[in-house]
Figure 1 (tube, rainbow, N blue to C red):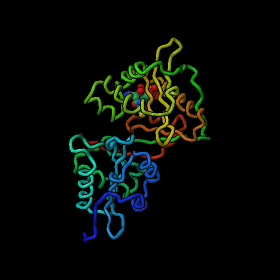
Figure 2: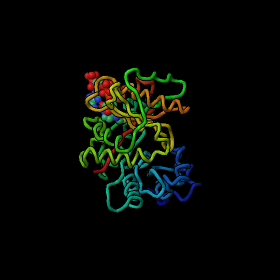
Figure 3: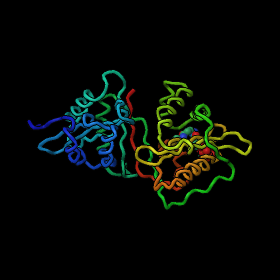
Figure 4: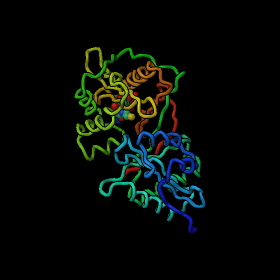
Length: 309
Ligand SMILES: CC(C)(COP(=O)(O)OP(=O)(O)OC[C@H]1O[C@@H](n2cnc3c(N)ncnc32)[C@H](O)[C@@H]1OP(=O)(O)O)[C@@H](O)C(=O)NCCC(=O)NCCS
């Protein structure tokens, strides 16, 4: 490397154009993320030479004042392995708390058939190998879905009825049951470190309760005799209307109830006049992925997730 090569955080907002000179699906969100404190300039690192961006790494968090929650920007295509490792090491040392597990890494891949494209595969492997040298391991490949306004709104269920949740305990109890037999890799991993009740409470507190959209949108699905079958949590995050969570209790699986419940969640948001709805699930959670497709959602992107133990 020549002497003017440097690895450093961004000096100021005026360098955002430089940071975003590598195209990526979420570049356009960075400005408002900085405004809201979900990102900080000192969390956005670059490897530059002669004013050219060769690599970058950046973290995001859910709310201002919190530590980094996700490593979601990482590019090393202009760097050799040695320089890529230097970028990772330097930025991780500066950004992450000394003790504790580094937050998960997630990467969008826009081409749904990215494995057919050798250049995409090569870069994904290089990124994975680089983070692997710092202790990360692949956890899941996910599908990101989108329903667009204009697509048919799925019809209301004829066999389930829906009502708002009575209180936190009711929903957390149902969530505790739903994690049993889940095919979701992040949940399975969490269950190695906590009980289903703890996992449900944690997901409720750290995710669901924090959505600022109306909790009156949340729905419990019931059979005509009043037994709960599952639930759906439509919400709005900082960027999009979303299906935040959906579940069918283990004893009711295999009857296609997910279709009725996802239809209801979609109908709640469509009724709130949204222009799109986002959802995501693991490739390995095939029943959920197929349900999104049946409900008129399309695959927007794939996502590769890595975690540190
Ligand atoms: C994903 C989920 C909602 C599917 O609900 P469902 O109403 O049972 O879905 P379907 O009836 O369409 O199931 C289709 C097939 O997948 C099977 N299946 C559904 N969930 C399954 C699971 N968790 N494990 C193994 N097989 C499952 C069904 O038995 C059925 O099999 P069959 O075709 O041989 O009869 C449910 O499994 C669930 O609540 N999982 C835990 C929470 C979760 O993953 N939510 C999505 C997070 S993004």
